[in-house]
Length: 311
Image (cartoon, rainbow, N blue to C red):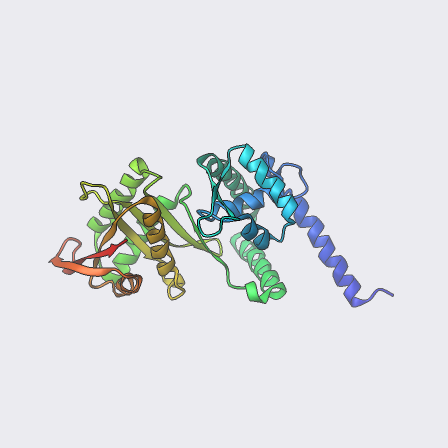
């Protein structure tokens, strides 16, 4: 007689066969790319970090060291990653994705998102929510310690720049009553970055949690610095639902680390006295208030503040 556990085992195996076939896991080339599923997963982990080690990747994915080493050698041969010696530990090599690696991943990511989007779009919204909720239930039941979605800091994807402008406009209008000229300022900042930024010394990060955009920040060269050794933080944002989890702090610390690596001597920023949450983040990070001036540019009287951080 078949036991209840046996029947449940059969049910899980049926689901595994169904879903792996549905998303193409068994194909030699994932999403018709040059990569197997394992290679695509390793590339994903590399893209999420500015630099990492093979040891960290192996631990994160539970991969055999020899198998991972073969994947990484192939990536290096194809110009997708570069290796540099770790200053902290000469026995370790730091792995960094190249521009070619980021381009390859962007194409793979777009194909994956399109496939999943097409699958979900065939369902009514209520059914989409049931599918996602069922997946969350599986994750939280089988791995309760991993139930909280991991925070990912990544570069912008198509549509993210528009999202940054839209969310700034909506949230600042709702929370502070700021009017259209503020949205125009945000749009100009984003447009300048999208059209002209130097990827070696300027960066935008999107904070993502559970597949949803949770925040953003820019670090750019300060236009008022003739020597070019001053960076400026711009457009720090954390969505209301994601606040209180340290996301703002992570974004600021990521910016500081990048600025150090890019050779800046100082970071400056412009914020406002009413933005108490942002001011706390900057103060805890070590920024110092150096100047303030009242103005009324967005329909409300506000006090603009300049904060500096010496690198």
